[in-house]
Length: 463
Image (tube, rainbow, N blue to C red; front, top):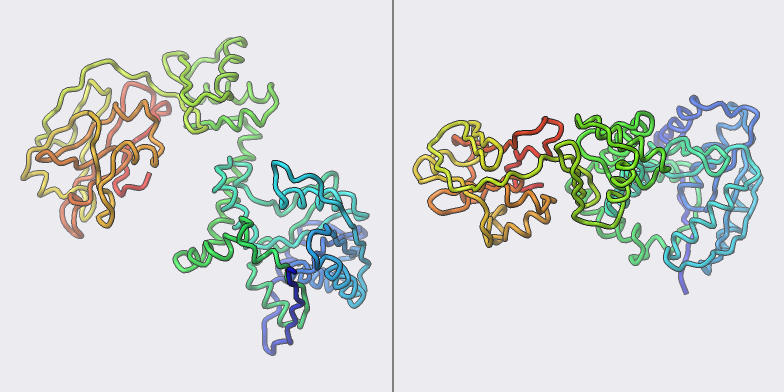
């Protein structure tokens, strides 16, 4: 039988208590709850217990009517015990509690977690309160963003959870969203609070449990402020998504998912604005509809000719690019010049001096250097601790579209492959610290700057 326990903490002396309390108080400065009913979604875990305790301490000064709602899914064998715990807690704090028992519907195609979350949201949306309060904190926000990114989400999914949102017709508030889990625990211990521990938190078969137990401890060692970084990224994604919604304008690339998520009229407007941002003329209504059909379809190598450019779809991203030239590309000797024109590839190879970075200049100057096209089977060693790998695999990992792979100039020295645009420099040819180096840069030409899909300037092997 799955186990569950009630955690108890004795009050700590001399502990600063202002963390969650001050954070929630600041949030309440931005929303007027006076005379309104505010319901906390109370699971019995430490997060919701702390939020309930903080809001109870602010109730009189802020003038709202506090209550709580506990949703019993009936999934855990300890569910009734958790409900009884919440009842005792609310009696002690003199907060009215409503217990909603729900039946989790079918889990086919979505899983138990998603089905339970859907049932809980339906119950909370019909709670007898003007405003709902959820106890999500900074760690929850960071984990949510990380999970969304691992699923390959777009701007909307990567925006995480908003501080102020809606659940159905009800305003939804997350006043702890800027507070780390550690501060929540410190508050609970300092106040001597009790809470229940959900056994599913230790279930490694669940994505969030696996991340918390296996992945995030490793991330913490290398990036101690990963929570703040991901939360900051979520705010940036949210701002970009809001700007996209308000203006309909995007630059560089456009995600096919952004078109699919919109109404037909909104999708047409967004695609028109994207084409205009690339300096391309607007198509006819019929042509625009056909473009949308192809760009939002299931094709993986979509290419649509329009106004002298090609609209390409690759890995969900839409780019406006210059069509490939048909000129033959014979090997070209490099004799130390800063700029090397490659008309067959419609571009220019530049070499920029650097110190302790790029390609070891002395090795290039001592050898025979040439630029030639890809022929197949080439290998590159980006990491000295790992074996050489085929360009095909490296291109796939770096997300370089297939139609660009044969249009890139490869740099060789005495027969060794030294550098590949978009991938990086072979480990054997990297400039040592403080040594003279050359940073190669490949710039495709023949199209407006905003139509150029890539400027290949990466030298570290990271796409």
